[in-house]
Amino acid sequence: MLIRSIEYSNSVSGLHVTKTTFDKLTLLVGASGMGKTMILKSLYKMIQCMADHKLRGLDAWGDKFSTNAHFTMKFDIRPENAPKRTFHPIGTSEPEEEIQHCRWSFKTKPVGWTNSPISQLSISEETLHINGEEIFRRADDEIVMAGFGKMPKISPDRSALSIFKSEPNIIHVNEQLKQVFMFEAEPDLNNYLPASSLDSLKDYVSANYTWFVNDTTFNILSKLAILYFVFPDIVDRVKEHYIRIFPTVQDLRADIIGDFIMLEIREADRWIPQNEISYGMLKTLAHIVNIQILPLESVLLIDELENSLGVNCIDSVVDEIVSSRKDMQFIVTSHHPYIINNIPQSCWKIVKREDHVVTAHDAADFDIGVSSQESFFQLMNALNYKE
View 1 (cartoon, rainbow, N blue to C red):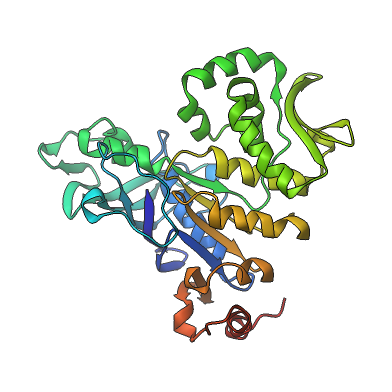
View 2 (view 1 turned 60 degrees about the vertical axis):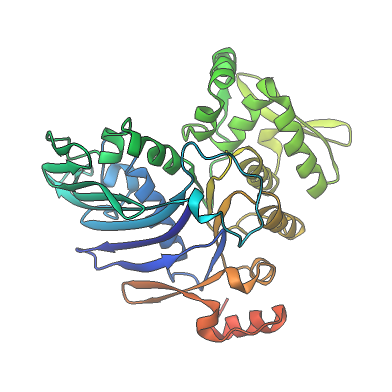
């Protein structure tokens, strides 16, 4: 799938992320506090509202971000029966007849506010359009679906995309939205799986690879550790990219260490367990794993790409993003000079914030120059950088 645009607003806080458009590769750049992460957050949390669970407020997301909110997203998906395509260069598009243009929008409201930190949410309005045709329209307790007319009352705390996920017009949309992945600025990479679960996990992964890759209950390095025992060719591909970035690494494997399943790297003929590997090396590995194992045509959101990466591997990770997976969409935030300067300015979205309004501008809006060096310094001036 390809996310084309999002818009978010909150009627209580006044926060408004104006309509923001995306390409195959989009770099959200701006000074700290301008709203780069807010854009990713609004996009990812919107997708989470589609998941097969009841909507929650403070307990799930730590704030009132999704209460009294209005989300709108436009995205393109390939029809379910369309043939799989080979990789395409960033910036190219598929033939028009093989793309379905979707628009999904919903509003939320709180239910039963108390002094409790847990507050229930409900969806007050929701619509889905595909190629301009309204698939369903929901307003509080009433929902009308194309081809069926008025439907029975549905649960207010679940998205219609989830409730009607088996319907022909909806099932493929639902599946495609699950192909959006978020890589946090500081992910937990040392949450190990118990060794006692290895056999059951191997069976699970063998029979349900796509489900496993999409499963957010496992961190990305735990997924790699299990894949080592089931699909070693995937791990070999990851290892090849990793050794290219860290030439001192001789090998990579997973093993049972104590009570846990851990990754190990070999340096100077010594195996080093995961809990002794530097966080920067682990995060670089996690980026590679994401890029190599995610399903075709996934969307990967990366917040603060440069965080915890050493100078020696930032350029390699950027190269992986720019050139390794042409089928994927990447939406990345950063304010690191190297990253900004090595991604074409045509991919930049310059994020500005005035009070509660967050806006992402094209580089052309600031008359950014042609050469990389000139463009970078003009960007610094446009942002009034103080970092």
